[in-house]
Length: 263
Image (cartoon, rainbow, N blue to C red; front, top):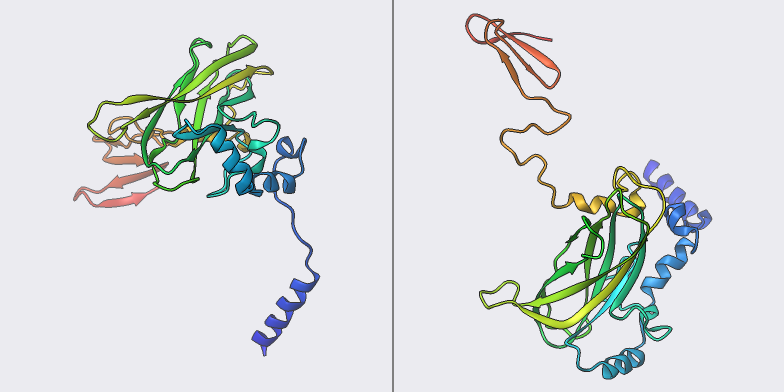
């Protein structure tokens, strides 16, 4: 009886339910509704437009597009907006970061019919003391025409960075995972970062929409055999008192070495 009532309740709830929106932060939806953000990345380019673009740039072994951090690339979907307004995102990207921020963006690759063993490097010498790194490496690209690969790039802007616009370049190297000599390819992506606004002491990790927490992916915290990771403390043994302190607790040992009390 109860199971029958539950099924009836679910059917009634599904009829009365209203479609829910995407839960995105105000900083993202301030300029574009959440549904529009999703639609922008899930509307695929037409085969005719893609073929015309590739014919125009037939010398490329793959095609690179810069993309904002808020527009995560969908698997096997080449967004139509990349080819609008003269394909202005082709081989270029521009973004805005704040001093101290770990700013991330995407370098997106559209694969030709040739499989490639790639690695990439970031040149960003225009802003002194800035640390740039590849968060996710491209590795082996599949032997599949029009496959899409997204590479995440992270740049740590210095806290004392001077306001202004700084230019950089993403370079691609072939033979990344073989014994053969790495060869730099002509394919690239130019980018510029405008530094403005208040400094972010935490690098932006307190605001999830910035995706600054991606820098934690290759963290070495906890790997040391001698340094204890915060907020934990090292285990302390008091030989005279025969006590062991750890994790906020104290174990007292009896004369036979067996714990006699835990406090």
